[in-house]
Each structure stands twice: as C-alpha cells, then as structure tokens.
Length: 358
Image (cartoon, rainbow, N blue to C red):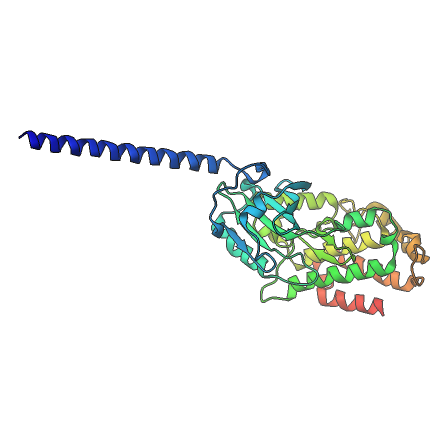
C-alpha cells in the first residue's frame, strides 16, 4: 500500500513538473512573438538585434539573389521621399557593399497579401533597359511591405530639369531621355501579353543614372495599393499636373492616360517649366497650364522653348534646328489631347521621335 502511495506521489510531481515546463515554454513563445510583432520596418535601427524571420518571407528576383532579410532590415537608411502611402529610403547594404532604393508601403494602404504577391511576381519579372527593376519584396508580420530596387545616382528627372546646371538644356540629353522614357513605357504597354499600366507617370518617377540614362519607376504600384490609397495617388498626380482630364478613378487608368502623362513630361523637358494642373474651360482644346495655353492660342509656340536649347548654347555640339523642336513640341501636345482617341499610341510616338532625331 505504501509503495502504491509513493508511486502516485511520484506521478503527481512528475505531472506538475511537466505542466510547469509547458507553461514556461508557452510564456517564452508568447513573449517572443509579442516582441517580434511590435517591430515595424520604419523603426528598425542599426543597433537592434536582427528579427527572427523566415527567409521565405523575402521574395527575390533577378538582381536580388544575394539579398537576405537581415541585409535589408538592418541597413542604415536615409529618407529621400514620402507620400501618403509610403516612404522611400536610400539604404546602405553593408554586407554586400551596395546601395539600394527601399520603398516601404504602409499596411493600411496595401491590399491583402494573397492579392499582392501574384502582382508582385508579375512586376518582379519585368526587365527592360529603361525600367527600374524590382529586385526583392518583403511582407512583414504587421502587414507592412517593402520593395527593393537599385539606387540611381543622379536622382529624379524632376531634379535634373530644375537644377539649372546646364545639362538639362542640351538637346541631345533631352532627346535621349525622351526616347528612353518612351521605350520603357512602350514595353509596359506592348511588351507582354497583358499591358501593364503605369498609373502614376511623372518626372519624379523617372530616375537617371550617372550617364543620364532614364529609368521609369513606380510602374504598376497602384495595383498593390488598396482603392483608397490608389485614389490618393491619383489626386496627388492631378495636383501636380499629370492627370489626364478623363481620369476620375485610379482603377480606370489606361494606356491613353499614361500617354497623356508622357506628353506632360515631354513639355517639361523642352520648356523647363513645372506643370501646374488647371481645369480647362469648355472652349479650350487642351489641358495645360494657362501660360502655355495662351502661347499656343497666340501661335507663339517658340516663346515656350528654353532659349538655350533653341540657340544651341550650353555647350551643345551643334545648334538644334527650330523645326526639330517644333515637331517635338507638337508631339507632346498631341499626347496631351483632351480626347483619348486623338492621342498617339506608343509605337506612333516612338516613330515620331525617330523621325525627329534623323
């Protein structure tokens, strides 16, 4: 009988020990999970310990094969741009001695992960000499999402146009940048079975490398945003002067609305003027800033050219002909037609640019 009581006591103590151990393990796991979930990409600093994240959370594409999640989340970063839906960082990837462009998308601005990942795979497969490639994609534990791109040393086309260093007044630069942007957009529209609509084309979304080669960025980004964030993107584009007049909802963006935005960029390049959105009156047949509309109505188009371009200044090797600039300007205006059916398509635009360059 005494032996039986001892056995029951031993079993009871053993059970208590096992339950205590299990509770302790559960407590540690919950504490670690809470600590893990409290982190956000925007608050991770260099001094913090690496997150315990499965490497499978990082989706890698061509050019991002050597990246790890720790390279990205531990990278010292400098904020170089902000929008209503995210933040842009210039990040130093220390282990591989490289610089990357990191785009953080806020959780409340993006779609569900099961909707976003298939779209990300499509965007990550696109490769063209005039498109900014997507090298990797990360989805965090709180719904945050991060896109990894190469970094381009000369910044945006908007900065290039307005920095006043003379390079933006060289016709050769203007022409080659225009052709590069058009080729990148043409690939998006016609290079695959199903067109990719950019949706937010503007000079701030064209990047330049050290040789002034243009790379179109942010294409298809509206596809991974939720409808509210996509509409906010459209409203920002409208305020900056790039929105086609017929475009009411971002979901209705099309080849034709992209071409309108391209026309505005071409006008920026040849005039050096920042576009300003102004609603046209019913009797006006174009959708442009008032100063530009008045010059066109008065048949004073040459007043809009930057004089250094027209006269061949700023170290241009040869003076550019007024006829070439006039054809370029007319092409830009055609792209900005208020009627989508009257805008040229990308093949026609490239053909016209080749004709101008002859």
